Length: 369
Image (cartoon, rainbow, N blue to C red):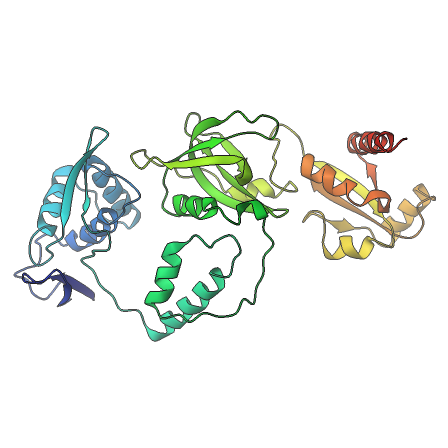
C-alpha cells in the first residue's frame, strides 16, 4: 500500500491524497502496471539536488533500477511521459527544467517535495533517536547541519556525551569531514585541491570519493582519480579545498575497498610489494599489550614446541613471547614496530630487520653530542 500526496489548489501545503493500490481508483491510475515503480524511482531522482540529471541521465538511472529489481527497461520517450504525468493532478509535482553546462536538466523546484508519504512507526522513531544521538556525539561531525535539523524534527532531546572519540585537532573547526561524507553518501564527483607533506604547491584532481577512514587520530579519503580510475588516498589535513562537480557522472567503486586493508597496517598500500611473513619477539613488559592489541589481524603467537624452538635459536632473548604477522611492509608498519623500542625485536625477514636497524642507527647518531 502506498500513500500519495498532492497539493491543494488553494494552498502550497501538501496534503494526503489517500490510499491507492493497483486495483483501486482505476480512473486515475496509469495504464502501464509498472508506472508506479517508475514514479518511485523518478521521485527519488528528481529530489536529488546533489546531481544534475537531464532526460538521458534519468532514463539510464531508471532503467538501471528497473533492471536490478527485475522489471523490463523503458524508452526515453516513456520517461518523458512519466515526468509530464507527474506535473499534473493528482501528483502536481513542481517540475523545474533548466540549463547547466550545456545539459537540459530537470528536478523538483522544492527538494523536500515527494509524491509518496509514509509515516514511520513508533519503534522506528525510537531507533532513529538512539542512532542520531550516538552519531551526534562523534567529534568532528559538528558540521552536519542536516543531522541537527533531523533531530529537531524528531524532537530528540540533548543528551550528555557517553562516547568520546579521538580526533585530529586540525579538523575541529573544519567542515571538510562533513562535506566529504555528504559527497560519498550522495555519489558526487568532487574536485580536490591539495598539497603534499613535502611540497606546499597546491594541485587539483577530479575525484570519485568512496571511503573515509580514520587511522592514528587522522582521517583519510580514498577514491578513484577521474582520469584513470586509479585508487588514491589523501590525508584530510593535506586537502585545501573541495568543489562539487554535480554535472559529472559518478563512477562507483569497482572493488571492495576494505580488502585493501587486510594485508597492511594503516592506509598506505604498495600494490607492487609482496606480503611478508614477519617474525618478532616481544619482552615481558610489552607482550600483554601486543597480545591484547595486535599490530595486525594476522597476529599469531607461538606456543608449545614452536616457542621452545625459538628460545633455542635465540638464547639471548629471555622470557617474552614470539609471534608472527603476515602483511605488506609500509611506512606505518615500520613506525609501529619501531615504537616499541628495545621491547620488540624483528627476527625476520632480513629486509625489515635491516630497515629498522638503519633507523635506530640514525636516531643514535642524532643523539650524539
